[in-house]
Length: 177
Image (cartoon, rainbow, N blue to C red; front, side):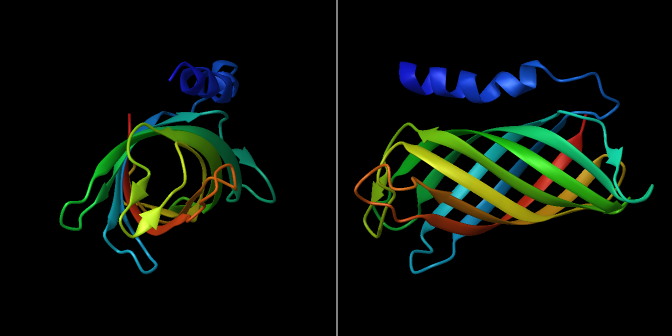
């Protein structure tokens, strides 16, 4: 457990050097289900998004680029009879490309740790440490509320003898503080 804490502190170092920005932090929640043969696995998360930078103009005033750090806490649940669940913690830098005021394109890559079961009856995730990535879209419903639809991938990248990755479509809702 001490190794996991040190690992996340290391990944969080960029957030400590955040420049002052006009961007506001966000909180959110998401739900997703495994896409492939094991649809019994569901992932539930709560997360906090800390802005790294204020949106900067790229090509024109309407095309902006910004970054965020996502801190998530969640659990992965096997909903089959006799299924188990595990807690998970993750840190993920996210890149946002904003082509209009109405939506963001999201790309993220990070790492995490699962504190419980990683081997399920129909899906073996291999071990506690994992890497994750996301790509998707977030639509701004109001100035403070956004709805997102993302492809989510979790893998241990061959750290363990088993590497049955987790691939889901993820629905998220975020609120700007």
